[in-house]
Image (cartoon, rainbow, N blue to C red; front, side, top):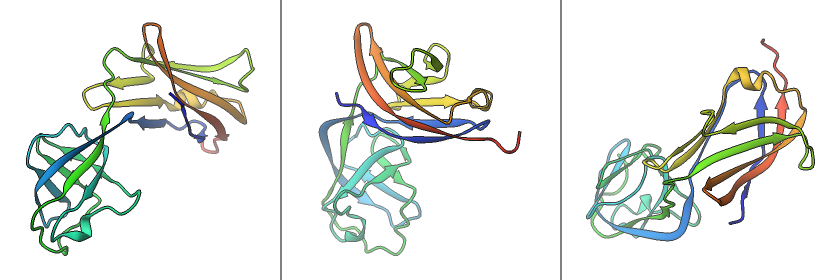
Length: 196
């Protein structure tokens, strides 16, 4: 797996939190039963789906309410879900045309995170022997949630306050036994704290 490259600014003395979702390349298509003219918009599917909350979804081919269909690489976020509904909090469909029939919710199947732990190291450079900070599932700074299919990094203010670098590099790995997956890496820029 090719790790994603994401660069961040960390504000010294402030909590830094990021949530990651690991999508497979397998597409899932669930037929739509109805789309409410509501704020936020609620989509009901004909059969149950496995969309976790916070997951990227597309609406494709919906009849009548054509304004809701995604174009190109655009996505919605399913902010809350049940077995057959998905709420799109960023969509106000009150003034949309009335849904008639057809269409699917399309999404990438989530990767099963069962058995995985995560670890992260921050170093001044890739070659530096000194670890500036290490976050792991064991120390509670990385969470792997297989129910809602996310990985979350949380560095509290007391952690970021101790950072003294100007720029650094980091990487996050997922591992299960001897199976190690490079997940994300990138550069960090520290914004110095004024209020302290």
